[in-house]
Image 1: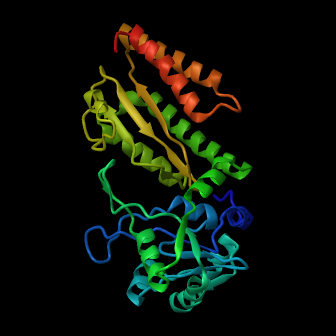
Image 2 (image 1 turned 120 degrees about the horizontal axis):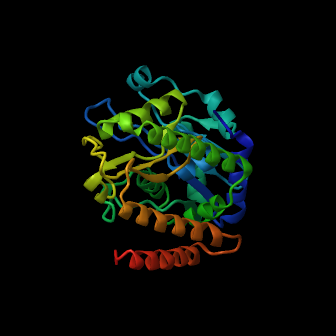
Image 3 (image 1 turned 90 degrees about the vertical axis):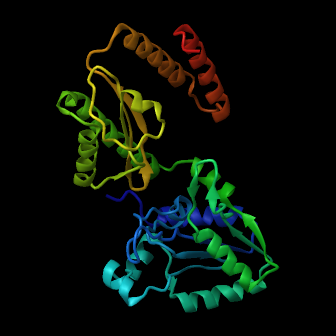
Length: 325
């Protein structure tokens, strides 16, 4: 399962190089986060922008894009780490990313330090704060660690936040990206139809979660996010995660899920009830009207914010008709 070859990542890096004004571009992969004990880490998830430029799903690698060359710096790995997690396949890294220059920690940072000392500006992604108050979560420390290390080599170097440039590049999808998104959606849709068809067999929310997990493993898919299976009042918690309540078949069961295919994700929410009441059908009819409206006005040239406002206004009218606001 791989829609992408090195030419995709090479093209992305070249476009970034063309748009960035900095003397030097340096980005890092996400790092591993300790879970419960010394050798136990949370499942690794790559920083999306780093993947977009390299295709690599390895932690702690540093990407350097200089004016005339580009290279990767691998992190130091202890013998203990390699015994438990395996050795890094350098040749596969070169093949995937299209970058021939791959250095170990010492030689790579010696090389990078020389460039940092003679550069006035460096392009990187501005690190997040340690704690995100909006979502009440701690953030990955890799980018903060990278910038601190660079500043230690040249305290006067100025930084250019290139995240907006990369986001701008990612807004235009290439055929291989569209194909990956379609496959992620197709698998997600197939799973939701299966759940609906077999719904009477499920006794507990976790029965549905187990079905999702089995299909994902069998088809080499990852969850795009932790699935939400919320029966009845559980659906009032927007990011309900317990997924362990018995299912009351007279109440609606909300399922919010999506599979990830080649790092591209689906995200679909559906509500299932086998014997809907007249009120259920009334609300469902309004949802269909809103969905049809949203599809009909989605055309080339419309700005996302204008699109969102238009759909929100139409949804507001339907909510008033239903007596919900």
